[in-house]
Image 1 (tube, helix red, strand yellow):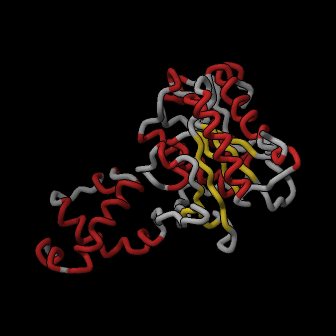
Image 2: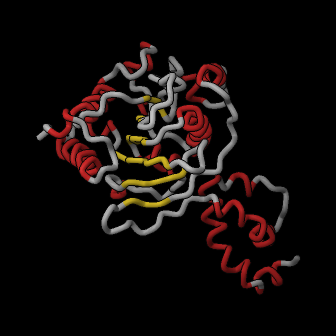
Length: 283
């Protein structure tokens, strides 16, 4: 098939913008690593072959006016196929493919507070990375930022949940993750989601939200919305994702703290989160 024939093909032409969007989501490197000299021709020729992938790429729909819940498709990633948390922790700690592995003191990997029994309200809290104190000590979720996350959830009566980091390694100066780092950490996070099987996920920070929702254009003004995805392991079950501001931005910003607390209370009032005696009396 030549480029001109592909351009004249209506299905391909209409599919092209979606395919480019899919490439941006899944990683443009996978396309540019090819040996072909005519990338445009290859792009068009490949378009028809990506329909299955496009069907599994989440697309944010307009929020329902009553519930403001966005319906998404679950990410179709299977780059990590790890059966249990112990194996995942070992593999991540032995991984050496990123520079931050060498600069970080500890790799705080895997799922913390993983329940042994089946709990219908399985809640997972995702933080971006260990802070300086946690990285130096190797004591996960012991630092100031983790304490802030705990206090925000506790103020709304949420005390029983699993925890994990998007990146088990702290970056130098706690800078944002690069595209390559996001790819590796996203693969590990996908494995965590399969093992943890959460029904509700609190996500602190834009980087984590982008990866969990497979939405590279996720912005801060999307915070406070709810997103509903199929479970990673059970096609009949749903997983609700609740994005919140990064803990780094919240630590000294009372306005954002109040907003985050208000988002959680709003979700509870809608029945999206379990209401308890503790949070009913929170003013």
